[in-house]
Structures are given as C-alpha cells and as structure tokens.
Length: 253
Ligand SMILES: *[C@@H]1O[C@H](CO)[C@@H](O)[C@H](O)[C@H]1NC(C)=O
Ligand SMILES: *[C@@H]1O[C@H](CO)[C@@H](O)[C@H](O)[C@H]1NC(C)=O
Ligand SMILES: [Cu+2]
Image 1 (tube, rainbow, N blue to C red):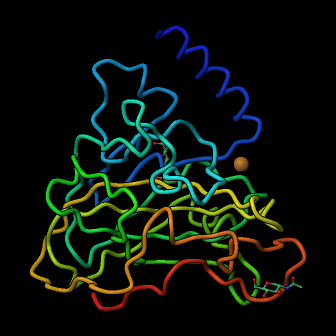
Image 2 (image 1 turned 135 degrees about the vertical axis):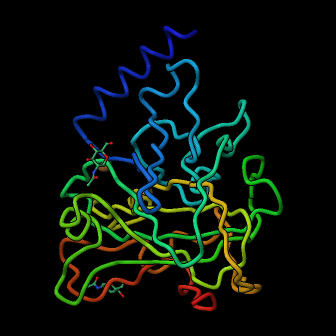
Image 3 (image 1 turned 45 degrees about the vertical axis):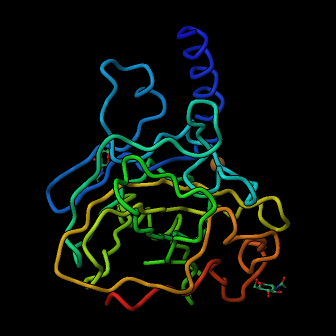
C-alpha cells in the first residue's frame, strides 16, 4: 500500500512540478514558525509530523465550487468526503499578524487572495464544518487600480509571504482559518478558476467580544458558477475585479 502511495506521489510530483501550482508551506506568528502540511513528504514520514494545517492531497487546485473539496482542499477523511482535521493549532493574539509563506507561485496564476475564519464550537482539532454557514471574511486582495494582482504580483514582491491581521476585537476561542488563492488564468468561463484553499487551525487569545452573527457563508455554497469574480477574463478585462464572497467583516476592528 505504501509503495503504491509513494508511486502515486512521485507521479503527482513529476506531473505537477511542470505545472507548479502551490500551497502554504509555513505559517509565522511573530517569531514562532509552524511548518505547513507538506503533501509530498508528510504522508511518508514517521512519526507523522504534527501540523496546524489540515492535510491536502497535493499542490493542485479544486475547480468544482459545489464540492466539499472547496472548503479545505479536497482531502478525504477515512474515505469520507471533507477535510481531515489536523492534530494541533497555533496560538495567536487577536490583533496580531499571521504571515503565510506560499511555495513559489507561478506568474501565470494571477488572481485574488482571500481569507475567512470560522469559530469552532469547541475543539478545532475535531471539528468539521461540513456545509454549515460558519465562515466570515477577514481579509481580501484582488487587482489594484494599476492592474497588479495579489497573486502573483504582490505575493512575489513580498517573497511569497501573505500577511493578514486577526481582527483585534475578535472573541477569544478556537477558529478555523480558510485561506485561498484563486488562480484565474483559465477562468474566462466556468469551470476554469482554480481554487487553492488551506485550512489553518488557531486558538485566538485576547479580551475581545466581537463575533459576527449574520452574513456567515458556507463552503461549498459561498461561490457558484455565476458569483462575480469566479468567471473573469484575466487577459483582456481591464475593469475592476470583483472579489468573490461576502464583504470583509469589520466588526472586530
Ligand atoms: C518560506 O519557507 C521556505 C521553506 O521553509 C523557506 O526556505 C523560505 O526562506 C521562507 N521564506 C521566507 C521569506 O521566509
Ligand atoms: C469584466 O469583468 C466584469 C466583472 O466581472 C464584468 O462585469 C464585465 O462584463 C467584464 N468585461 C468584459 C468585457 O468581459
Ligand atoms: Cu497551476
């Protein structure tokens, strides 16, 4: 079984290294670093490395927005659909920054970078949101007025590090962060956009009390084939890019 998996992984590695997509390989909170889930080595490493990012099958995209795969990147949990939780979480103070280090992102894969959070009812290392509407957006970046894209232009300029702030007044507790790049190089029609979500488990500390109670969205659910920004001609459309999903929640600022 293991050799079959290794062969598959090697096949996937050689196939995808040509296409070179990516994933979050490191998360930094201040000077504390958490290595991301490494899809080409973690499954074959013993003992299994303890990660804060939920397992992903590889560096490739999800393209069907109706699948549970769109939530945390298409990994099955014991054969059941939906992502498998990770064993640990990062601790981060409300109002502090998280720096997400992506693998080298291909120039052709232009698109937005979007980050959501969802409050875990109790233990985030056991929680699977399923199709519940639990997610709120905390950060987004699309195309600037001068035509620069969050991915790849700005991400490359920042050495593949994307930084966002945990809302300063967010209620303490455990959360799942859903962070994604949407690559639009084939998004002139649907399906075409490539989604690269990562789910990061955190415990937020602080004395804040803010938590959104309305406008929460589900994954799958938040995006459809006709949601603005899911289909977009990245080569010829010089208009503003409408970032998909709800407005950024500002109640925690
Ligand atoms: C991102 O992570 C990689 C792999 O750990 C590391 O080599 C690289 O230096 C990191 N990038 C930055 C800007 O810290
Ligand atoms: C450009 O994108 C916007 C937003 O998605 C859309 O409304 C508009 O129709 C597009 N323009 C062209 C020429 O396709
Ligand atoms: Cu790709």
